[in-house]
Image 1: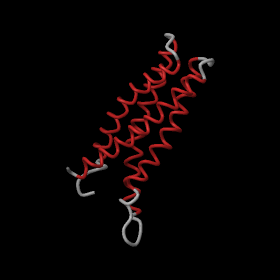
Image 2: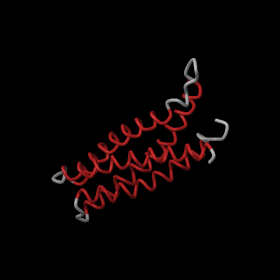
Image 3: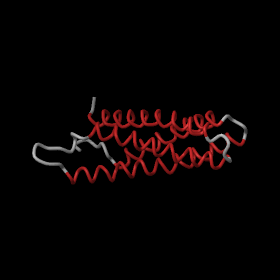
Image 4: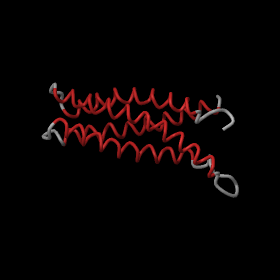
Length: 149
C-alpha cells in the first residue's frame, strides 16, 4: 500500500475516534442542558464538542506522527512547520463547514421537539460526514501526503 494512503487512513482513523468520543460527550451535554433555550443548548454543545474533539484528535495525531519529524540528532522543524500549516488549514476549512452545519441542524432538531441527546447525535453524525469530505479534499488539495514527502 502506498505511503500516502496509509497516512490518509491514519488521519481518518484519528478523526473518527475523536468524533466518537466527542459525539458521546456532546449527547450527554445536550441532555444535561435540556432546560436551556434551543440556541444556548446548541451553542454550548458545539463548544464542548470542539474541546473534546480537538483534545482527542490532537493527542492521537501527535502519537501517530511524533517519529515522523525526528531524525537521529534533531527535529526537522521546517517539515514540521510546513505540515502543521497544511493540517491546520485543512482542518480549519472543514471546521467552518462542520460548525455551521452542526449548529443549525441541532437547533432545527430541537425546535421540532427531538430529544436533546438525539438532536445532538443526528446533527453530529450528519455534520461529521460533511466534515470528513471537506477535510479529505483539503488534505488532497494542500498535498499534505504527497509522494516523496
